[in-house]
Length: 78
Image (tube, rainbow, N blue to C red; front, side, top):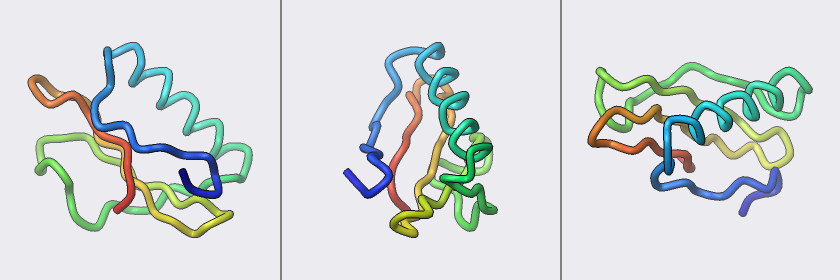
C-alpha cells in the first residue's frame, strides 16, 4: 500500500467494479489528491484503454487499464 492507500488490483471482478473504481479515481482527481498524466507506454497494448495517475502524497505513478475480455483489467504501479 502506498501513502495514498492504494493497493494493486490484478483483475477487476466485474465491469461494475471497474466502473465504480473509475468514479472513485475521478473523484480523487477532482479533489486534488491525485493528478492524471499522459500514458507513456501501454501495459496491455494499444487496443486497451489506459490512464495514468500520480499520488501527490508519494509521487508514485499508477496505471489503470480497462478490462477487455479475456483481460480483466489492472491497477498498479508503473
